[in-house]
Every structure is written in structure tokens, then in C-alpha cells.
Image 1 (cartoon, rainbow, N blue to C red):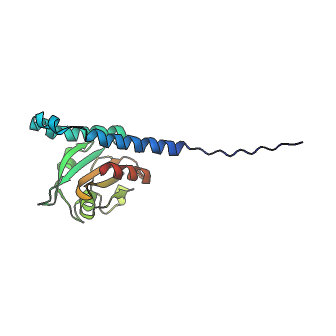
Image 2: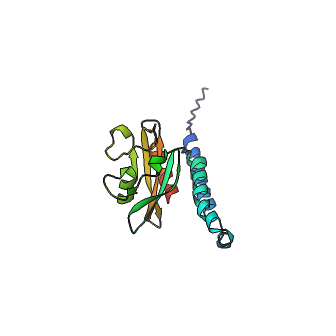
Image 3: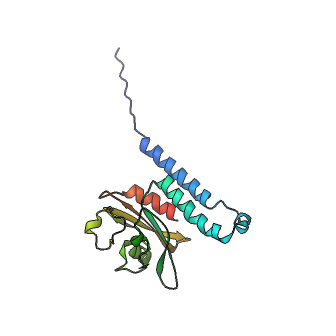
Amino acid sequence: MVHTVVAITRDVTFEVEQRKRFDALHQAGRDLASLEADQLAEMPIDTRVKLLPQNLKRTIHDLLKYDIMEVRLLDRATLELKPLLDDGMPPEAAARVLYARPQDNGVTGYVAYTGESYLCPDAANDPHYITGAADARSSMTVPLKYFDEGIGTLNVESPRVDGFGLDDLQFTELFSK
């Protein structure tokens, strides 16, 4: 009598890693919002002003693994995108005045204007891209939203062409909300 055994296996490494990233993203959001109102009230104003950018920078580095970044907040009255934090950007790029407009304000201005994320796979051949980091070859910019209202942008850059994929975009969009 001959017995035949058939086994089917499936590699679930990707799914497990995705779940871990989602869990870490959820925890990061909770951590960013974890200060109680009375804790904030006890802090001097200059400490409060510095706390958010520091926490954001640390979270973006630790969780999303981005080293070259810029966060700008939208001034609703003027449509200017005011720098909140940057890391890895040259001073002239960080100080550049940008507005939420569809043209002549880089990918950041375009994203703030449209409210839609933008993957720039090849910075050298993109009509919206304005040089940020000196060695950037690609970028990804997502709108920052608060209750579905655009409040700014998060821009990250890579020294590689096609440095960001759809998974990066998905996690960054979740983070930006």
C-alpha cells in the first residue's frame, strides 16, 4: 500500500511584517497624542512649541525609517506652507517660501493644493519637482490631514530613483492622518 502526502505551504512573512508595521503605526499615533492637557498646560510655551517637531522627527525616523524629510504647515489665510521641521534638507531648501498652488511651488505646493499624495519616482524628470536635498533622486509627498482637512505636508526624499513604493505611500498616508 502506497501513501501519498501533499503539503501546501505559504510564506506569510510579508503579511506578518505588514501587521507589525500597522501595529507600530497605531502605537506611534497614540504616543504622539499621549500628553494630557494638564501636562501641556504646565509646560512653558517654548517647550510646547519644540515638543511636536521633536516627537514627529523621532517618530518619522524610528517608525517610517525616513532620513530626509520636511514638514510644512498650511497658513489658511495666506496659503503659505510654513516650515515646521526638516532633517537632511539644505538650509536654502528648508527656508524656501512655498504656497499651496498647483504650479511653481514644487511637489509640496502641488500636494497642499490638491490634497492628494504624490510619488515622484525620478526627480530629474518630474515637472513639479524643485530640488530639495542635494542628492535626492526621488521623493514622496503626502498631505497632513486633521479630520480630513489639509493642514500641511510631509515630504521625504531618497537618493535612489524609485526610492518609494506603494507600501511606503500607504504607511505614510496613514501616519499623516
